[in-house]
Length: 553
Image (cartoon, rainbow, N blue to C red):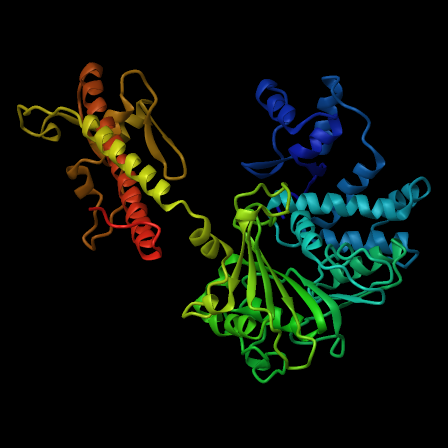
């Protein structure tokens, strides 16, 4: 994580943490950065997520009369970040151990002293929960998948079934215990977990102890290669497994008895985790798996998906809104499975409930509308692809094909008219070619201060009233400059500094620039026409095949 860092002058803080210190919004901090020349310069981080020295920030806030006293909890958090950096979970585990009365030799004495001071005025469970919230917020801001996001946890809690007394909840990849400690709040439920990262496992166990939860046991280890709970059968298994892992142990686990639905391929580690979770499910018990959306349709997992459907194990697939996961904006699915009551049996239900929430806000309600639900017969799912993507099945039931076709046809027609009007009038030129006369190189223009370079691609733009940017970019894309940028092997790399443009007065430049600008807009419009044409043809074929559209007279 990029924000877990320290400078030689002490801890670093993000813009969000500055806002907390000053009691203002993040937008206010961004405004300060623009308005005040003496606002502290970044001491680390990246351009889009700068970090500032805490000491410099405190001095500036005091000088501007915007500061407020830093709470001891904030000082503890900053000290932990400075001491542990990217190994912050290890620091949280050491703090939890100190609060639980364990020997924590790895905790620096300065931090241990802060912990003991805080523990005299604040309940240990409140302190460790506050640190956990800060850690989860830090992971969310940096796009880390180190911890299950609160949005994912909320969805799992919402769709989890009620459990009878004396039930067991199991999470085989529990991380710091976000799901394990919050799902199924019924009294009398015991919880078991396993986690590959020893620091995360220790922190989850210590936090459970501080919460007064003797029913929780978490062990460290690789769940797939070294299952610590071989005889466990739980009434509910929840899991947010590591995504995209190909080295999950397939070669050494080829003959493992857990693959009763089919041996997962190397690329389908998600389906290995799913079958591991299912193997630990008691008859009549449920599994809630957080899965990447692509697992629902990838060719490699078709056989396993078919078995889930054929045996009546798959009960529901929920496509969650984009932004639900911490580390990316792509949608994730929640797969809801149920083991048949009889060993090796098959449930008799005939549909899979598909729920598509991808059009909702990630913080909005999780209760689906009627048009977001479809009960799909098993026979419709058991085709050549076994696509379990909810949207694929809801579109055919609720899509307004005539309305969409008419709207796309109008949009395409309007865009074609706009493009026809956009093309510039270009009368015959007097010749010879513009680049055959007096020219100058872009490198010379840059040395004279007339050109600057911006963006990751270092695109040249005008830095002077003597040069028109559209004129400059138009001639840079001319055939002569394109040939100069193409190597003998055919590789094209625009040589902006070696390129040449004709010498013209600024009025003539603007005439050319206007024409080049219109051509660029025309090219962009043609790309839009191409996409509209593709969408229109695809929609028409699908509507005709589904019977929602019919050929005209």
